[in-house]
Image 1 (cartoon, rainbow, N blue to C red):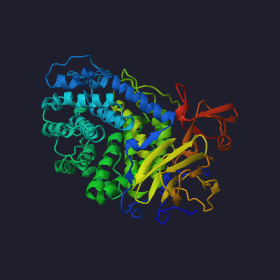
Image 2: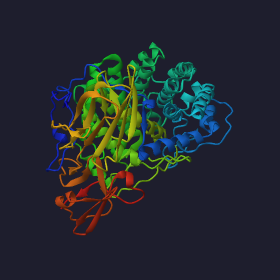
Image 3: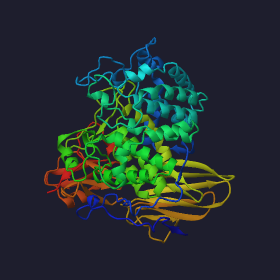
Image 4: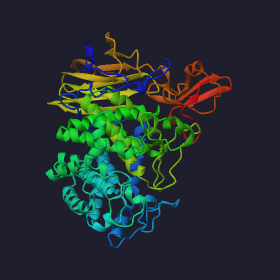
Length: 610
């Protein structure tokens, strides 16, 4: 049975800032710009309808967040837009950030009215993706009805009265192109054009950085927090989906080359930049490459992602207190003690998933999938659920005294990205080209697709990452040859594959896609084993004795103090239940849980070794 790494000839270097002290494991290593070469053609995504997920952890987030959005009053959803346009605005306020409050003062603790209507577009987008997944006619009817009602509110006054005209416009573009593509809204592009005609008169005309004042008048600092430097991604997508050439031109106008140019030359300019929005902006750089073929923008995103990994927690999260850091900064370590705002989770995870998805498609490098997987299991998949009253999980806490809590503000920005990423697990799990299917995420699921006249399904089962075994079964209407490319994580030494019970003899390189090519027939099954050997990762090379314990992609979070714990004691932890590990220390038993199993208990991410 032939098995190979289809990209094994690519050269990589190991960044010193990512190397680990000790013997217990390694961070993700990504190619330096001079060594990385994109594939001749990016991988294709499957659609939302092609993948059904059987994992209760993933499916519950999707199901519950869709239910919240379906429960929201349409008058309440439209109220801030109507108020700001001077129209009658019946219904109750949703509250929180979503309200319109002309007297809002960001220096007050209560942020009611900070971003009126800003998440409306994200919620429509999430409902459209949800309809593509489950075919709910009630959801489609609500999407079309809300789009029509929204279209009647479009007003320049809305953008003039908003602190976030570009941010809000960006989310509305996403809503309408998703409504067109996934919910077949026949009027979506007409509403989009009207939105663009009105909004463009109230936008800066180019990318303006965070904290830079561009409006005329007496505005406080909170009016400089808009994110015009992120909007090119959805404008490029609008062009790709047939909305018109004008969207490509507008997307080019808003590319933030002040940010991208140094990054394209492998010079970090991260220090002091707002974390989520500037990582999200890298998705615009990737779309500039995918749409225009701009290698400068590809280089900027590639180098920036390597810089990002160098300042990430073991969870994959980044941006303590919502800021990126200089390459030589020790602020990520300091954040273990001085902040509980370690990673802006739904927003950050949503941007991280998009960026790694783009990079993986372009480079066909499995290690982008490794990074996506870490963020999934150690941040967003363990987030508290979005509630119908607007309670939203905002920060994953990596503090030595961490807890899961809801944001003190209802309906913040993360309430918009949470239902979007809950839908997007599906389009991140599998990719394809003419010769192969790539399995990126190991999640119980079924992929269904058509090759020519052949109807094929690939069903994935198992309890990974809590167990090491993953199974696949194929069904085909007729036998056909193609490659099944399986992601072998960089940490998975000793991984093995068996086809129809016969183990493939070739050794599997870690940090690659292993290709199993054969003429498949219905009933063929593949068994993948990814050994879950425990390993330690220090916070950085300056603090080699401040470590996280990992099993596969999972950080195992200590649930109680363990003063004087040693390296050997941590590495001796044993799995004692489905999602619980224990080890003996000088002060007693130490319990460790994955993020998905933590509820309201106190926990830590890192421990100090004796």
